[in-house]
Structures are given as C-alpha cells and as structure tokens.
Length: 192
DNA sequence: TATTGGATGAACT
DNA sequence: GTTCATCCAATAA
Image 1: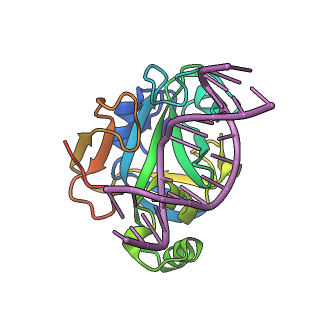
Image 2 (image 1 turned 90 degrees about the horizontal axis):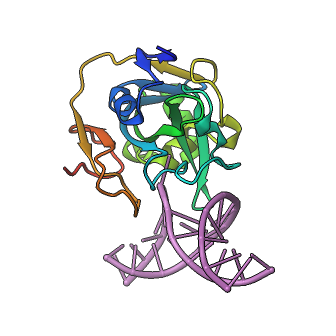
Image 3 (image 1 turned 135 degrees about the vertical axis):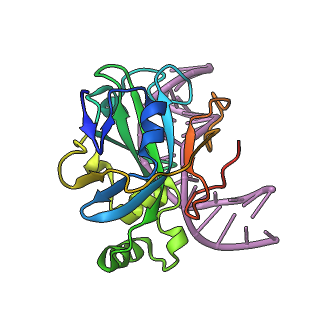
C-alpha cells in the first residue's frame, strides 16, 4: 500500500482503482458528492494523455499516486483525474460524474457555480463536476489526502458496471468506463 | 510556422 | 441528430 485513501491503494493499475472509486464520496472544499462514473487511462494505450510521454500539461500524472491531475478540455472546461501507479508510469482515473451531496449549503454553492437549478445537471459530466466543485488548474498536482480534497469510503455496496469510454477515438475497445448501475446522475447511459 | 484534433457542454434543428 | 464556443499540445511542413 503506497497510498491508502478511502481504503483504496492508488498504486494499483488504473482500471482497478477506478472500479473501487464508484460509491466513494468526493469533496473539494466541503462540496461534492458520491462518485457514480469514472474512466481509467494508462500510458500504455493511445487514448491516454501519457501515451506520448511527459509534457508540461500531463506532468502530474507521472508523479506520485494519490494526487490530482487537472487539464483543460476543448479550451473551456476543466477535468479532474486521480493519479495511479508509481512515479514515472503515467496512469490515472478521470472523475466523470457525481451524485450531488444533500447538504443544503453545498448544493446552493454548486448551483450558483453552475448557474443551474436542476440536480441532474450539476455534476453529470467531467466539465460540469469540475465547475460545480470549483476545480481549475490551481488544483492540479495536489495530494488527495489533504485539503481542499477529502475522500470518504463507500457507505454501502454498489453495483459497478464496465463499458467503453466516452468521447475518444483511440483504444475504443477497452471497457475502462465504470458506472454505478441504475444511477440517474451519469453523463451518458451505460452500455455494455 | 501552420494546421489539426480533441478524455466537453450548451444550444440548436 | 448537428453546430459551435475556444485553448493548446502534437504533428506536419
């Protein structure tokens, strides 16, 4: 166990970490919810930002496991990842959707940041959840076991389903997207 | 130096 | 279903 957060060993391969993250509660500055959708990425496959090697953008994915990797997508969205494996490997888990926490103050803050009322749309997508949680490049390469981050273990069992990843054109065959079966907060429905 | 293509989301038809 | 806003790393030249 190199990095034990919410009972998860982040030095394990990304797909293994990814399925264990479903049902875990993620808070950033006290705001967040239960993780219901994630995707695993690894330097060995071409859909990963690490496939090409170390760059200014992806350097945190080559650092220690159990840290954040935040990147900008399509020029306007931020996306949050958790780093896996060991230093120098290049692997991580993209956090794609949360079931928003029921704390009233937290919900109000997320709604304000998103400019929306509808609970379903607060955190159902990687860009949306980063906006709701106030995550930007300022939160890149930070340890996940210290503020503003907080990870709490699953409170109950969840049914985890695996399927193909969303929005990629390479390595489309890998079933490295993991969702909570039946969740209403997914960015897209599960497909096997 | 120029072009291209995204680990997206919102607003359209 | 399609379009588009808008940034930047990778690739081509």
